[in-house]
Length: 424
Ligand code: EPU
Image 1 (cartoon, rainbow, N blue to C red):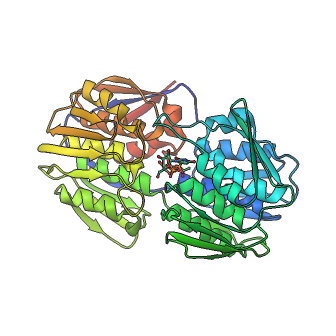
Image 2 (tube, rainbow, N blue to C red; image 1 turned 90 degrees about the vertical axis):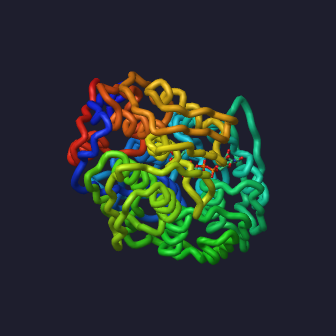
């Protein structure tokens, strides 16, 4: 995890020569909420299939600041939460990690108070926290704000209640579900997120004794019970990493097998690439993909699960630049997410942003190498994919942003034939 490093990619100039298999790691957006949930459990928690990514390290640092013990060995994380001594999230780390907001629910529920800065994260548009504040207020918390920092408190503990999410929010659903497990009464969450990571978090909490009904539906009901030490829990595979590898295979592989996937988490992604004419073979826990001669244009609209995931949009955009004809990408979740397309245009793509939420892509356009600084993790992967397709040597700076969610990506891509290295 070296800050300020750059990925250097020798492009294939459109050749489709990648070959072999690539394993999908545990999901960033599943392990972070599980780490936050361990705060609720006054015992040891063991997580397995944990990716070695910098967001996990950052979350671990915040937990240590609260008084937890955090031990990492290979893919295993042992979290000790018998005693916690602080209710204040480490300012600098919490600011750098949007997912630090996940801790508000569990720390408040267990300790009666939590203080934290407005969380930072990717430059993909506005990321407010109003739903967290309103949801926890509905469970009896008071919210104070001072200088871009907040304190949520509920000295007598949280009460039961009913909360409707006016916008579907993944981490909002997760934070409230976690807080509700220690509330004094039954909590009903309506218009809850359906993402597989929300379901995985609920299953983890249930394995620790929580009573949660309606998981995977829009109405989740949590009835308070005592929590105990859960059995070791494996982090689910990262469906965004899988979607990225599938896009890469569809662009540049003679044959690529993406291993350790849950195909049903990828229904919307498979629907798009199959409509583009990509041949896939879906096994129980693997998907094999081959780049076709001709990619068909397609209309993609990002949506909450089970729709097409917004985090899979940037790598898929590279695929659209290589389709013959006019494609449309509608980004319905984040209003700043299309900004990275400017850099793809510098590489030769023809992408017109008709609004902050809609882009028209005309292909096929040959891509040429460029020097790029990535603004965020998912755009970073789009630029790496574009660099692989392009002619010449592409440099993608801000590699540390890619390290937030992809473990040793250059080593794993090299193993399937990509000429990529990291330069300090
Ligand atoms: N929103 C509000 N108020 C809030 C919270 C969210 O208006 O208090 C809005 C957001 O502005 C956005 C919409 O709700 O327009 C949905 O955002 P959501 O809250 O679902 O996003 P998130 O929970 O902050 C998670 C992932 C993101 C992923 C989104 C959407 C984690 C740690 N992060 O973020 O992952 O893009 O869901 O699926 O689970 C990434 O991994 O690169 C990443 C950005």
